[in-house]
Length: 400
Image (cartoon, rainbow, N blue to C red):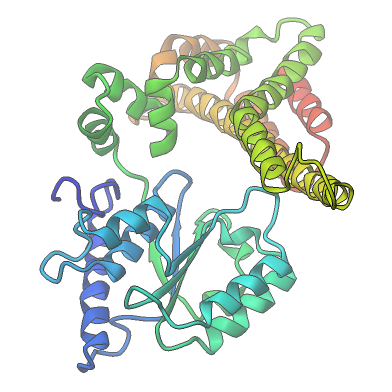
């Protein structure tokens, strides 16, 4: 794939890219008024795949291809249209990336209204909804009406994880063309880390081997020492639960780790947003009208803080879930070793620790521990308080 093109970041998904390129070509013929085979290009797409497979990356590349001005190489990545789409600034491409726990009906109604307008600079108006599984029931209904009766030059691109496809309403799914992505191979991830991000090849291979096929996670592990330290602290838990008192220490440590990571990830952005809002509302001004402006600024600031709190909660949940995925991978590795199966480990760099655990535990005990981790993830999805869910899990991890 040509370096620098919009498709270059869609890692390990050659078949999906071929489908999208064919659709882009069909869309161009449709714009020119030529006949297009039924289904070659459709107004609604659902990108599914496991976490880290690059659903939103593929959707952005598709959006760039639709808007690209290079007729010979659509999705060239070099023209103004491609660059603005990939940067998130194209006038006709609206991206919704939920930062809170859900996408509200008010936000979706506003989006649907914008989608009804004709494109201004490009050939298509594109609406890209990341994590469309977070749509509330009201938001799903608002989107459904638009998908059922779409404007002629509007395309909806929805992204949702394949492990919870039922979270996207069946009526919406039935009106979308589904594009399924796969977990990218470690070799492809290592290659893109080394060539695009300049990561040392040996570090890139290690990160690709332990990321579970999650491209973004591989990049963080390869470039962020703190991310590597957090992963190691999580994987030390299974054999670190020697006394029952360790249960509470480990549970509190896991939750605190997630909280700290959420604060670190959002702190700088939160302060920047507050300063920008204060400046926009005339902070520090004097003279007539200052009092009413100050009241308006305070109200806007409270609303911003509410959104930031929701974003922090989402970040904490995501961080904690990532730690649980690592733990689940550890217990899965123990079962693999005990069974003698010839398959790659999720955590090959912890092979000796896994082997030690496999020698100490029965297969039934390892399976109970794995189930406890999965039950904890489910409890968190049902909004159980994190410390309660994690303590219950760690207690099982201790007792087996």
